Image (cartoon, rainbow, N blue to C red; front, side):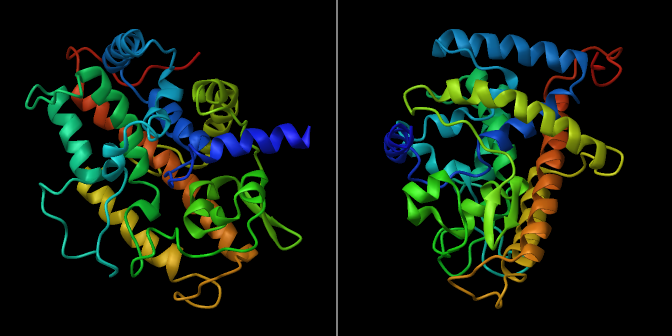
Amino acid sequence: MRVKSLCLLAVMGTFLGAAQAWDPIGHMVVSQSAYGQLTPAARAEVDLSLAEFNRKQQAAYSFVTAGCWMDDIRGTHKHYAPWHYIELPYTRDGEPFPVAWQVNALWAIRHCEAILKDERTDPEVDKNQALVMLLHLVGDIHQPLHTVSRNGDAGGNKVVVPNIEDAMVQAFPTRRNLHYFWDSAYRRTVKEGKVVETIVEPLSLPSDPLKGHTLAQPMAIELAANLEKTYQPDLFPATGTPEEWVKESHIQGYDNVYQKLPGGEAANPVELDQAYVDNARALAEQKLIQGGHRLAAFLNGLFPGPASDEGPVKEP
């Protein structure tokens, strides 16, 4: 069994070399949270659009798993790599802010929005694809290390964290870094000095990533339901613009990712302690649900429907 697991991880290594933002379960939590906040009109529109997306892609993504699609294609669509992050200067306020035409995650969100509004066209991105991209990109900018990078450390990818422990880093020790930790901080704790998983994500082959997402979807739905009880919409309202969300994540990254590092903000390598991991988990949980609420508000604005549409669909 161990040999099979390592072989599977070896195959995955060719696919997972580049850093993601949230891991697949994290992106699915964002999408699940958003879906529960959609108005009837918006839900009808996105359901139709996703069905057409699946027809064209010959796939079977749900709204929840579709949030992972942009990471699923990273190996074959490398030109989208800059769409996943926005690197602001390493200052607390992140100024000067990038100009609007620079290709980054914020530009990509506005680009997809313009396509959905018929204000722009892209020969590679139709409306259905633009919608699926938005599910991912809004999630990306809520992961703090996709908005802040310290002195060329590639969003924490060059900050070594020796005490992360899971199957992936056992097979690929170079993934023991700060960015990898924050991708899954919402499901991490410390046990016997090691930063370990509280929820273990199913593994899947790069040739069929959707299989793994489908297996993990019930985990994401359950986790989103539990987190919604704490991070309720009235406590964490879906306010602001994508520009403001980026600035918020940057400040939180500066304050919580780097300034709170055990040993000081310049520590590298750094062993994460219980206090750091607990703080990171709470912030990551909040950011996942906030990302979902804000994604829903964004989509509700794009698909307003008739005036009689009276708010989110109530789940049975």
